Image 1 (cartoon, rainbow, N blue to C red):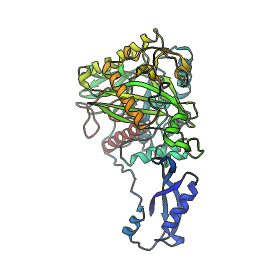
Image 2 (cartoon, rainbow, N blue to C red):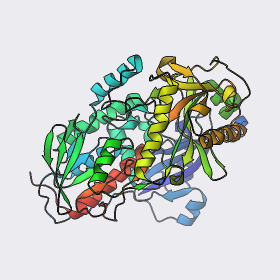
Image 3 (cartoon, rainbow, N blue to C red):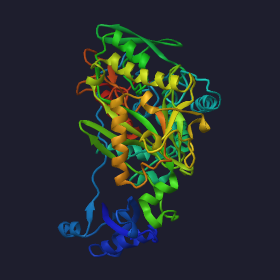
Image 4 (cartoon, rainbow, N blue to C red):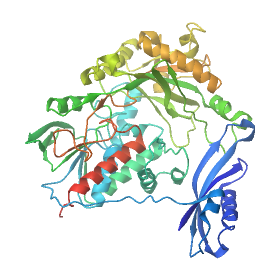
Length: 534
C-alpha cells in the first residue's frame, strides 16, 4: 500500500532529503520501522506569500509493507492519506476495423492518442503536415535569421505541435488521473525527473525536442507509422464515413480518422467545413507579449531571497476582468525569448519559448484579452478572419516584414513618449522589431483592456507596469477559434468514424490537457474496436 505524507513545510535552506526524513518521522507514529519502504518526493511547490519566510512545501509517497491495521482518521489529522488510485481503465470492443486508424497531427494530442493505440495493437498511421524535429528546427532557425517563412514547417506546424517551441509547461487546470500518466510518459521519453513531482512542471524546448523524437520512435517500434510533410488535403466520404483521405503525398485508406489538428490549421478547418463537418465559433483571446528583466520578476516575487540557488526562476499567473472581458497572462516563459510564430505569408504572430534552464536575461508572457463571438459576428470564418486581420495589420506595421511591432510600456500607458527600449531589450528575432503605436495594431477594446490589466497586475506584482517593459505584438494563437462538436463517444456530429480532439477541435488548452484528450479519444476508439490483426 502507498501513502502520501502531505504538507511538509521546510525553509529554502533545507533539502529534499530533509523532507523524506520528516515524512518518515510522521509515519513512525503509525507503522513499525520495518514496514516503511521506499520514500519519494511526490509533489513539491513554493510558498512565497511571505517573502521574509519563503518555504518549500512537499508531499512524500511511502510504500508500506505488511503493516498492522491503523487508525486512518488519526493519520489524516497528521496529513497522511492513502494514495488515490490512478490506474487507467481500458476496455476493448469487438467491432473489427476495416483498415488502420489514421491520426492527423503530431502535437501532444496526436502523439498520445497514437501512442496508446500503438501500445495496444491498433497500428495507427500518423500524418503531420510539418517536418520532423530536426528539419523543423532548421526551418524555424532559418526564419528567425532571414525572415523567410516556410508555411508548412514553422513554430505552429511540425513534430510536437506548437508546444515544441514553448516553455513546455505541463501545468493544467484539469483534474484527471491521466495527467499523471502523461507526466510519467514524458519522463520516460526524456523529460527531467522533476516533472513527476513539481507543482509547476516544465520541460523546455531543448528537452521537448528529445521527448517528441523518442515518442515517434516508440510509436514506430510498436507497429505504427509517422509520416511527416504529409498534409491532409481532402476527405473521401461514403454514407457518413471517411473512406479515405487525400494527402499531399497521395490517397490513404483509413478505418477511422482522428483529427488532432492544433489551433492553427485554418485551411484544414475550411476543407472540413466544405464537407459538412459541423463547427461552431468560440471565444478566444488576443494580445501582446510583455517582457521584463527576469531579475526584476524574481525580486518582485521573492524579495531579498531572489537569486537564492535553491529557488527556481520566478514565474507568475495573473488575471483580472475589465467589465465583461477577461485579461490574463498566458504561457509565461521565465528566462526565455519572444519568438516569431507566423504560419501564413504576410502575417506577424508572436509566442514565447524557453529552454529547461530558463537562463535567458528576460522573462516574457502573453497578456491576452478575451474576444467574444459577438465581437466578430459569431461565425467560424469570421473568427479566423479576425485573427488573420490582426496578424496582417502587424505585418504592415512592421514595414511589410516579419519584424514585429513593438512599444515600451511607458509609451503604451502614456507615461513616456517616443522612447526606445533600453533596460529591457526585445528578444524577438534578436531585436528585429519596429517601434510603433499598439493602438494602430490592435482593436480599441483590446488596448483599453490591456491598459486596465497592466495597472491591475502592477498592484499584484510590483514593477509589472514599469516604463522599460517591452510589448511585442501580436499574440493571436492562444487557443482555437472554433469547436468541432462531438458526442460522448468522441465522434463528430453525423459521422461514424471521425474523431475530433485536442486543442484544434476546442477541447484542450496546453500540452497536458491536449495529451489527456488524445488519450480519451484513444480509449473511446478501443472501447468500440478490437485491435488490428498483424
